Image (cartoon, rainbow, N blue to C red):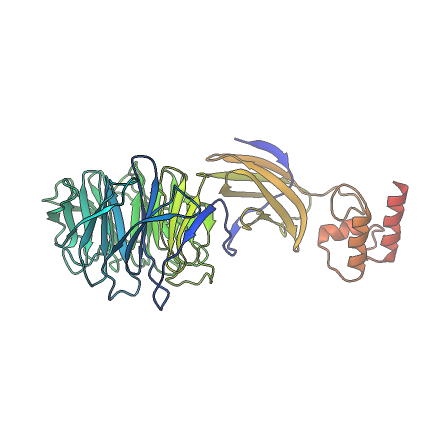
Length: 494
């Protein structure tokens, strides 16, 4: 634990406008949208044998692959594959990579309907090759590929979840089906013989035993209280934590303890400023969120009871309304700390992220004054916290962080907290109390700066209570020229 004496205090996070922090923008690449300004869709990634990183994303007419390593500030297009592009306002496309092969599904009608297959192995020396299109499915919103080469495909108007064998990656063949199970499937994720199915307007997240594909069994279903549209789910690598999204205004991203599948518990919740989240992916203890009009959010779920936002970037600058615009997808699984985010209106964003984690602050405030009116505001992201009973507790990105302590919109103190990750950092904060009369700005000296503040107060500028007490030098509870004279005498006598 980190222990030090410092100035100030507070508690309790308050929503503010989204601020970009802890994500460094590398590049933005845009392709032409339709007349409604839609076209860009989901994003995925690939790393070739030499370490070059590629971003894969959908646009109005098909799929693009960009080399984002050779010239990071100006990514290079290496492949453009046309695909179905009719009858879908949002141009839904989804991507997964297995080995050196890319698999593409979509919800559109038109030419080449099915699952497109692309050989990526010629990279970086030659361009990828289109191989074939698996046509035992038609439209699909989503697919997932496990480590054994089984593709689980959400099958619009078909068998709910269609399973394809990729043992020969260039020649997908039918393996099995969920049949009537997984009704309403919108998204599927599998790991360690379990399938996690987000079942749309059934408002359920169901977990299935898929150890025997000829005998798939429902283990349990999660029905969030007053649930929305069960949209997407992802699981930590130890199978203990499930994170879900509901793509419904006001419905939170939920963190579930699934270590005991017979006793699943809701642990924590999070929701960004626009009150509408899209998808989540998990890498280690960090959850990467495509959060529509507020862009990309990253939260730390090291403590699942208390998810903490550690990075953000607003890709959609128009507004923060609860609408289906802005950030569609986020891909964090690169090997060089790059993150890709696809924004439906503004294109592909590439960021660099230093894997910043959260720490927690437990602060004991030493003061005789009633300081409940004050709050801390972060220099990093403008988030605000309020004190409760001379103590506060909250999580925040680790590192040396700076806050202003503010009363009545006036900064009383600027303080620093050295926050260590994944521990509770103990601090003692001391508010100004034995202040010097005349030291209105609490900088430890009476100077011309204090005279200026006092003159402005006499002329009508409002001071907070602490500032008023320090300015009322003759202690008559009135600020006037007599206090100005007293202050001048203090300066002259010093």
